[in-house]
Image (cartoon, rainbow, N blue to C red):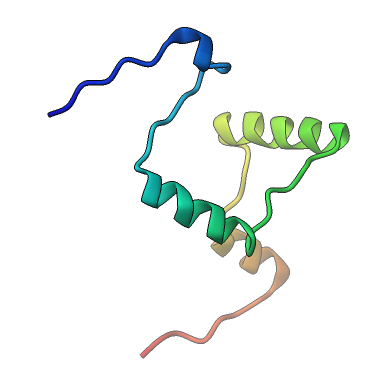
Length: 77
């Protein structure tokens, strides 16, 4: 197994990922089809709140939502 050393000055963020160049090129290719969304401050706040609620177990399942809305799905055979 090869070992590499990356100088700390090249790592600008706490989270750092090293991947093969071929996978990085594939990521760049796919990024054209799936652009990264830029969240507004309000959206960031809402996302943070939603994640906190999820951690506390404050959510309902799809089955619960369908029941509350009176939606019935056809069962798969």
